[in-house]
Image (cartoon, rainbow, N blue to C red; front, top):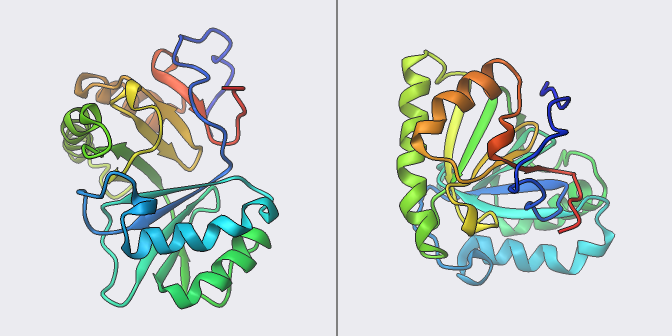
Length: 220
């Protein structure tokens, strides 16, 4: 659990996260997404269009992002936070169950195969087609995370994934860490050891890089 007692003195980055309460990551197995995944065709656009008519009925405000995690050939896996669940091989025919059971009903859908997500999950925006800064800052940042975690024998406890646009490309490199949903901005590869030591191992928010948190309304 992250200790929030040290968040009373915050840098200018704080409050730059647009409010949301549930995050869905589409496992696309790629990191070269169209500029806007919700308009780029295929599964991401289909899911975005299926979700859109139900937004007002959802008890939690949903954010949709793509990541480079592979999926099986017959569907797309979905990672969902704060629920810490992975839906397996989701197809468009499963959208009603996902939306009605989970996103609207706020319960795991027993109609779609799923498994729990354990450990830490680090997401790095690398979406160069959306913003050149993310495409430049993100890849070396993700690589540094993977190298540092391997050096500390933490790769089995922390998973690093590359993502499409998360919001606030002016703050690249952008890093999201779940299950808590903390956001960090202006992160460089040199900051990675500190984030590992302080956030992942010691449970402390690194306030100088902290942009906000899932479920916190910054008013921005």
